[in-house]
Length: 128
Image (cartoon, rainbow, N blue to C red; front, side):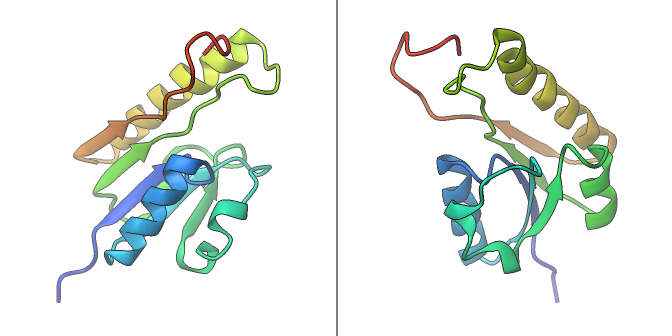
């Protein structure tokens, strides 16, 4: 029997990521998510028992890859839009440095696919 493909989604507590997690679980994928320990889980509350969850602020980014054994693909859709008055440096770190560190961990772990995406907000809404 072939085991299910394993996906790691960053940003699964947001709108886009939660929809992707829901769809991939429905399609039989093994889905893991990487989030902040303070992330709100309302969008995925009904899925948490079926997800492997890792808190990015509590463990090295290598942890999910090591604990899951093999990850087929990473989908990064975690985005800081600056909606809560975050400084531009924090927005930059969240949207540039974090995904780069996640990409490096994925490459080091032999992941063959990495997708970086987000949703689009109205132009000029914030520094993002």
